[in-house]
Length: 288
Length: 250
Image 1: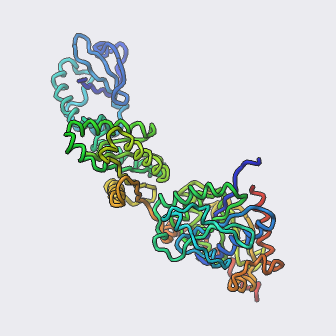
Image 2 (image 1 turned 60 degrees about the vertical axis):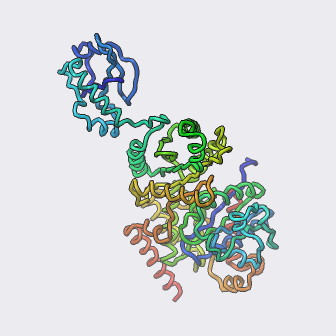
Image 3 (image 1 turned 90 degrees about the vertical axis):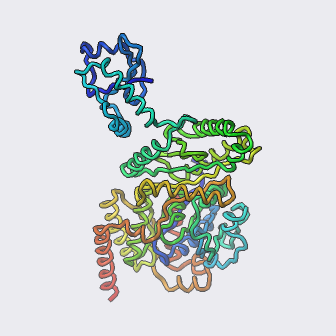
């Protein structure tokens, strides 16, 4: 288990502290650098605060000793850090069984993606995937086989998505996929790919295991918060179930004429009204 | 430049009763007269009216494509005006609020059928529903029909704005319908165009105008297609001028 040392600035090459960090090995956390501390078997993570994502920062803020000042002796704080690492592990982003991101990460990432939609104007889609008849595997083959099947599913889903998509285990036999910058029509195609992939997992057809998938689309004009967004995908997923399982169903925005008209702001309205007036008067006087 | 695929033109207006269907049918008839292979699709899925306008009583509609397993190919019928026609159903509640995947199904099957034509005209419904937006996205040319009424001007602008904001489309072709004169049509177009320029940042394209004439409501009532029944009337001449321009889109 790596030890995390956080620094506010990069150590200078001749810095006394940096000499204790012998070799930068690889990246782990975004912008984090894996380093070996001289004279110690422990491997330490050197993380520059500037390089952390908002989420990672929030995560680390919960840790009491997260920042080791350059003045501190890192070797002295290793014990403290090990405690911290245990905490970090308990806050981990990864689902233990499948290796996918977990529910906690999913919610925070979804919030990030919704903020991105608001900023860029590009819609974001959410897939809520529930395995149909998965219980059959658990009940007849045992939970160990059930777990193995879930791992297969996780692997399959990861292969179905694009580099920008994020697949998470929502819990039990439920999975979610965040599809950033994606319109619902593309999401439907990806969902169908998931559905097909599940049916091709060895053993799936024997136990009638399939996937019911609900999709919701979040756009700039959606009044949703995170819970609404998830709720929409969830209820679409229940639609898919009630339509006979092994289906893809959607929820999204329906623009009524009134909503469309609301997009015309008062200034635009005024401009249009003046056109109307001009044309109307002109026409009437011409006619007379 | 031969294999560019068909021109797919959506005809929208935001407000109902502005003359979308009249425009669609008459332009299609003109294009057919010029020897083009034309398909008209009634995209007003819940409240179809192209069939009424041309006096046909279709047996199968897009409803059978969505809920039955019919291919749009089998639903398309030939009309006596030289163009083919894909009808929609009228009063089918389940067609009013289609799910995305249903619209996707229509688009997919329509996309294949479209390849057999030079021009495809999508007569979309009133309002700015998801299906109206989707058919506008499906089209490669977006036509907006408006008239001088305040509600029509506002709805047309709202339609343009929503399509622009949703899909980034910024090229719209304007037809000014039931105008009192060409001069008035140009004036309306110029004003609305400058509002678009000012608030949305792009200009509009003038596709044409159709002057008001008593023969129009009369021909509609008789379920006649004006460019056939009164081909020398001013509105018919205006329709064929618009069709002429659309031929150049190919």
